[in-house]
View 1 (cartoon, rainbow, N blue to C red):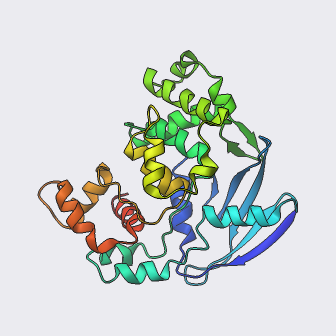
View 2: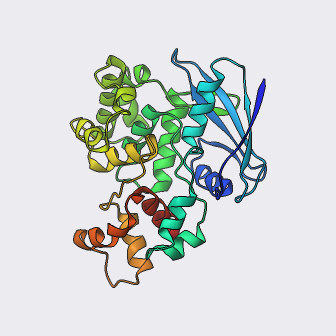
Amino acid sequence: MVIRDVKVEGPYNFDRVLERLALDPLNAVEQENRSVKVPYYLPDGNGEVIKIQATGTTDQPEFSMTFENEDNIEQKLNRISDIFQWHTGLRDMHEHFLQTDLKPIFEEHIGTPIILEFDPFATIIKSIIHQQLNLKFAFTLTHRFVSKYGWQKDGVWFYPSPGTVAGLTVEELRELQFSQRKAEYAIGIGQKVASGELDLDKLAEQPDEEVIKELTKIRGIGPWTAQSFLLFGLGRPNLFPKADIGIQNAIKKLFQMDQKPTMDELDQFSTSWHPYLSYASLYLWRSIE
């Protein structure tokens, strides 16, 4: 067992991070203890569990990390820093939004970072499962899928590998209450990643437009899923999924509009929010959760 401590630039509200992670029953979160266990996926298909324990405050964030061993420790540290966006200071972004019409929600939710899903492949599978479902059933369906085909270590769930998903049948997923198409989409993605036709590591090095272009070629992945991958899989800072109903409802509520904003109105609203559109999206979602 190896313990490493890290200090992060504030503001950074880890309690809000844990609130968000706790929405998903697959995540091993202890809010009272201010900790979460993270599945770390290894290239050989195995995995390790890394525990993140908050020891600081929103203004002076500090964390203690517990690793199983010293192997590739710097790589693991970098991955955890990526997931929790510790290398991305929130201060400049926060100051930017205090000069915009989103000031009220940024003051209320100060220090809320974008948190990545724990694995890029899992991000896409989760997005496909969540398509056109209410959040509660989306989490239920994802839990059924992972608990049946994934695996568990030290109380932490790991999503099934691309190879495992590629080998499933539509009938198996239909038994979990997947729709026919959703089952086909999930298996298809598994096959593309397992075969190397879709290389998520290489994709992560491409600009936003190229990632969207590549992903939307794939059956079952539309702009919403591609943007979700960019935002929660890769942590890209300047995405605004304006077709998202939650964002439209949040803007309607915040600006006391009689009806949901049009696409043109959304473009006008968001002009001053660049280059941090992803944070505008996140804080708008938070404002109605």
